[in-house]
Amino acid sequence: MLLENLIIEEKKNNKQLYSSGPYWDYKNSKAILEIKKKGLKGFRGLDSGVGTGYASNLVLDARNELGWKGRLISKIFKLPLLNKIFKEQLFHTKIHIKEYLDALSIIYKTNSNVQELIKKYKFENTTEFGCIKKINYQKQDISTLYLDMADRVEKLSSSFDFSKIKSYFEIGGGFGANVHFLITNFPNIKKIIYLDAVPNIYVGTEYLRHFYKNSVKDFLITRKLSKIRFNNNNDLEIICIPPWEIEKLDVAIDHFHNAASFVEMPKLVIDNYCKFIKKSKPKEISLISYDKFDEETTFQPEELNSFFDNKLRITWHDWLIKEYEKKLVYLFSKRI
Image (cartoon, rainbow, N blue to C red):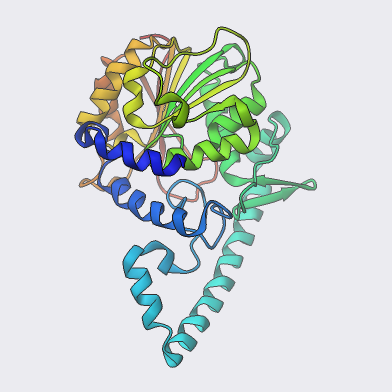
């Protein structure tokens, strides 16, 4: 019911103001079909294309990434000879994926920065929903994605005191892993707005509900409200909203955060978001992005500063594991 209502309401709203950009519009349409077909079981594993691009999954069968084309190809590959060839290819692909995951695990486990992060932060229940990218360290399974997020928090901690943040607003939170990590390690963060595009917001809502049950308020609740506000108490409250619901926010925020997705959105969309972000009067802002762009679908991260009146400081950092040549760009401010 939640997913269907999100899809219906999305069609009624201003697509120009709330588009995720060409890359995500295409991915999201395929992900909706995948969710309807398979649900969320194992979406962080090998057999689902639901979370491709943000859930650190790997796709064994490429047909899961091709929508209607994949269904057509599946029918073609039912022919005996082609089916035999395809199964042989899947077998070898699985071997290569295992080799990659084994190597990745060794790289993470032997990295001194990773070891320090594991000592400092909690990594409880980070491999739910079939997580395939993980390490086993001192008899605990830990998602490599959560380790990357811990590294980002650690770098941001030189500018922000996360132990003093009470309210937090994130746009583009993927499947909710960052929110989960923060709540686990900073129980002082009690009031959270989590916004993402359809169907990502559905995935994230259900992921967070898996851990926090009734503390999660979804679109079926917020769509009935004229204003979206936090309750005046110290109870955990995670309000999960699709993009157009930002217009109804009536909250004060300690910390606003976006990681990687702003530069993938049309500038008109970011400008619209920023109008409402500024209304929430965040005391702190943190943006994280990356370099090496496709100029047709993204723009340079330094340009994000212009949306915040050029008040953000900019620093460049390496990834936790230098798996890529890219660097991460951190833009942050204590007050705007």
